[in-house]
Length: 583
Ligand code: GTP
Ligand code: MG
Image (tube, rainbow, N blue to C red; front, side, top):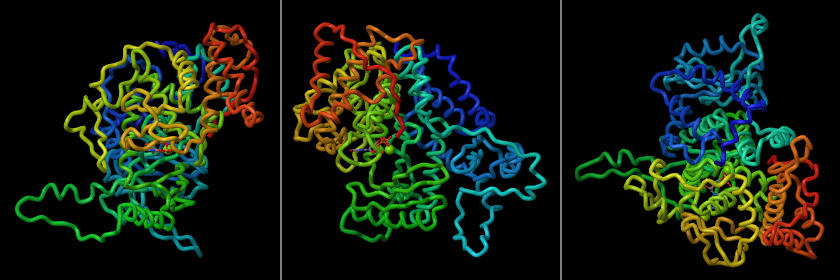
């Protein structure tokens, strides 16, 4: 079974570190009537790479998780602390305002604490004793947020009681550490699961993402009371790597809905509103004022850019306290639905996330993806390719979107801007796959499959789970699952696609060769996934010989040799080189 050897990884210090980090958080998870217990359960099922497709623990709906985490974030404050602090006294001081459910510390240009109270009233009570600083010649713009600053009174008297705090880690491992972990792994499956565990968002990082949205919501609520700011994209779809951006959706749809449903009789009340020529103009106007507000008054929001003429208008900024790069959009409900769909797929079988993480890291390591927009393939497109590949296995590991639609009930019905976005929300109604292929085999076959895919004529379609004729001439065509006339990879150029194909072929070949002749752990040679994350031969060749040979003949020949009989040719592709997977 895919993940069966993961338990053997005990010699690595990883688990020890993780449990140390989470101890202070767990100690206080005891408030009655809070979501802590449920979230712990969810943390176990989504955060563990050890569960297989046979894991049948009841899983929560995406909307349930979102609502619970949002509510949890509303009971949480973010406090900038002095570098050294007496943790016990700090918590005692705060608990004068009510019981604390959980807390953790982290570093981001200073020490911060995220403290979750059991009740919202405690936050108000704490805010009521919090003052606006007087800054000497400068003037403060008063803003009563949940992002606070802790100062020590009589710090000289307290010095002896202060101590360093154990901080939760918010970043992915260094290349060196990753290299060591991968080389010590027991098998390629073990390597993929290790990569997942090291790169996936931690419980604390996830909380911080919801908290950041909640703090931004407080600012936006000054203009639009009852609005919601919801995270989407890789922060919530279970494919986020530590350090990924925070995509936020300003949801104004709920405003006025509740009251409208409640009215009865012959009269109907409507709000007086201003009209603008189109939805796009409305979106631009809303984001313009919110961007201005974040820039002028948003505590901790820096580098605010209003990118209003983009296809999807957005406000981009850095949230200093959390360290997140944030993209705020509105009128983008389909993207939220896409996040829900990916979350579903990620939760259906433990191999999905392990494979997606490895493919994303592989693509990043070879500069196939980039944080700068351009002709590169995106992580979203790569995820769709993995899902499609897993739908094509025999027996399939993942169901098609059309099948998920047939399982939907009335509650799942969802039409957004005329697009049918309906699919089942209850994960427990989907039967587990009978496929038992290992991650090693799947990774190798993923590269082989896409190394030979007829991109020139076929489109990737996760709705139907089969290849279709390309409706237009873009080099790469991946049908948008909900807006089916759109191509999510329209931006990808022919040369980037060719680079992807060359690298996929080379990686298939490396894994194939290794299956026959794996370097021994004592040889200190990078192997398996570690070898795949190294700068590539195909990459270097395509740089030097791009003009003469757009498709590397050598790689093609190698792949052919795999197919015909398993060539004995094992040239030195896995010599020692430096790993780079960092964004
Ligand atoms: P990261 O690279 O880790 O940020 O992955 P991501 O999934 O968050 O991607 P990104 O930040 O680029 O986009 C956020 C979300 O917007 C995605 O998860 C999708 O739901 C949606 N999205 C991104 N690109 C496209 C696209 O081309 N078409 C559509 N329909 N949705 C997209
Ligand atoms: Mg993102």
